Length: 193
Image (cartoon, rainbow, N blue to C red):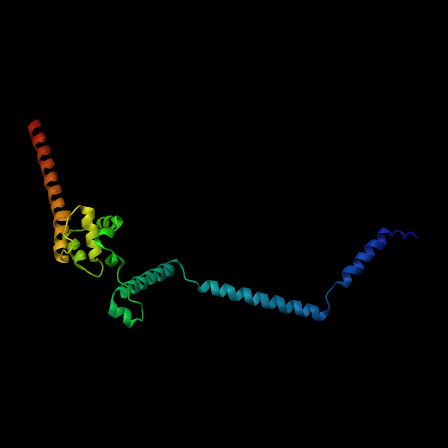
């Protein structure tokens, strides 16, 4: 038996009937409104929390403070007293564990790059600070500068050699060369007159 074809009007009425049947009940509407209000409160709460996030200046200050704490903790691990007081494991500096033959060339290069622009007296003070510059660091710097030394050299003797031969003498010769170049330029100018 063939189904009777529905007219356009019947199709529209069926569609309207289905749509009306899908309208939520009063209880369902209340539940939807309740959920929407909860979502709205949650979004407002998120907005308030975003407002409390640090701005660019605060971010820089926080990152700077974290770096400071990190450097402090690293230095505390190298100091047995501080490590014990803070319940941190005591770790000797890596360069102290290296033998003379195992000194890494990049360590000497890095130290040299840090020191080459500062005054000679400040270089001496930095090298004398055994907390920041280990004997392994001094050996690496000496090797980078081409300064030969005995295997059991005293710390002070090695520092003296590094400062005198690696920095003070080199800078002195550079100043003399600059002075000679200036004098020859002066002579050339006076000869031309």
